[in-house]
Amino acid sequence: MSGILKYLFYPLVILASLFAGVLLLEHLDEVYFIWIPLILIFPLTLIFVWMEFKFPYQKKWNVSKGDFSADLIRTFFILPIASKIAELALVVLLYYPLIYISTHFNGSLLNEEWWIGTRLIIALLLSEFCYYWIHRLSHKSSRLWRLHAVHHGAERVYWANSGRFHFIDAFLGSLAYFLPVVLMGVSAEVLVLLLILSSVSGMLEHVNINFKAGFINYIFNTAELHRWHHSEKENESNSNYGKVLIVWDLIFGSYYWPKERRIDQAGIEGEQIPVKFFQQVIHPFKSKK
Ligand SMILES: [Zn+2]
Image (cartoon, rainbow, N blue to C red):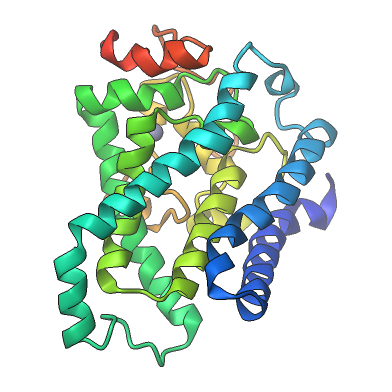
């Protein structure tokens, strides 16, 4: 990828996804809303896979290390199922708070007359704040790290890493991400746009595509930043914890972007995470940091 395209790639994908999401929200019945992020993710995945081979950041990361089938199962089955269970848990746990909100605040703590973009930004900042801290805690607490290490054990950073999470890690992350917005009583439209942003940005964090994001790296957590989060060196990987945004990292001092260097080795120094699916499932219960 060359010239201006290298810089336009990230904002174009994000804006086009949101635009397509808004169009689908306007034209689809509410019962189909939950499918909108998936409708967008499938064609995007095909484009990303093609671009990884055409414009790779690291050619060696396009070569499977026996991890592909497990990553695929996690991305398209385990992560959506964990998110769904988190969603159901939220509905059960928050039954009474939601009744209270709906009767005392007309269904939402946010003013539904505000522009949808304003409501989305408020919801996004809250979700990101909660996710930032559970993610940072996952690097500090040895119990949580054992689960989160499945994600960091990847020795290459590519599109399917966006779903390479242990089931319990994915469940906790989804709970932290969606708890505040469900509590706020955000509308289905805002929730769908938030899901689109977190899914598309999750892939854009990991894609092995040699794009540049420029000043956007001070707002969004792009692949240029997130690759450092996958560095095998602990002092480098304990950084850039955001999911979509990087603003909480900037505020809480965990922002890391050595512009002149390229990350070479991804993974966990001194620890080998199995590449097969079922071995990864039981690995957190056997290993120590
Ligand atoms: Zn992490």
